[in-house]
Length: 83
Image (cartoon, rainbow, N blue to C red; front, side):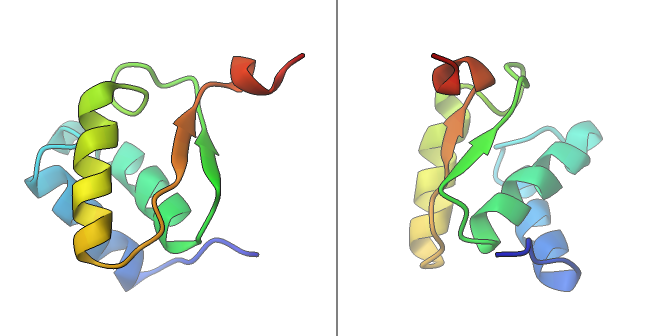
């Protein structure tokens, strides 16, 4: 499945920023999360512990995505998948 692009990603990313998931100055991180969400991806794998891989992000992502009936991707670091 290809990741979506365009206005839907921008609007969802803007909402993530507005509601405090990602700080405004890191809006491209919000695009990353919005793309994984709207793309229906099972997981978003990233090394970004500062703004993506944190409990606050997971909680707010679940709230916002449930409100919009959007899949909630797991937020994981790459080490989870190395064995």
